[in-house]
Length: 295
Image (cartoon, rainbow, N blue to C red):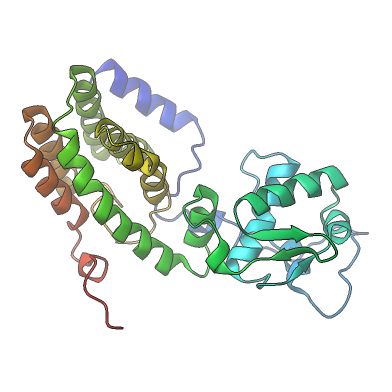
């Protein structure tokens, strides 16, 4: 095993990556937790109970501070539909409910506004925006959709987008091979092989994500490179049988190896074909690969 492979596998076992591997979905805060609310938290006014429901859910902090936790919780509630479009968000109520300062509430709402989830207007206040206004390519929104009620749609859409992006990226990357990049891609395949042999899904996922991100970056197309974060997000939220990258297996590893070899040989057509095979390696992929839709 190379030094890089050993280092990466050791680091993966000792660090919390936040990646979702099979069986980890329940650690996200959509599952109901025991209904234990802290004493003294003010109730929400009126009959709406959507905002109050978050108090019964596990906090999705994962190392975030108060600001990050509030963004996470409010964002999930909006994306899951608990807070529907045009729902008013009153900063004072949010601050009381989550026991955070006005500054934390204000900054959190600004982040959500930048993502297109809410809008703030004078004399109107802050309201939830419709789905058509959301930045659906934002990594946080991808994650929230992937682990909420829309998980099936989100994963299908991500897979369709990957089917569009990555075969082209593989073809382009074959014409821009550098020795250092080729070595890095080879290292990632080696790491994936060792990780699969040891049943280390976390290390496999990390190496897989880096392989695909590096491939897109080396394609030397800035617009494609801008989309590399989407591919990383797609790999990180994989939780169902969608593509050959979802779970470590011999077929997936073999296709990654073929892509590496085609890139090293400068064979764009072979690299593109190998990528398409990788993205359709799972027997259930027929429901994911884009096909003409009825209108």
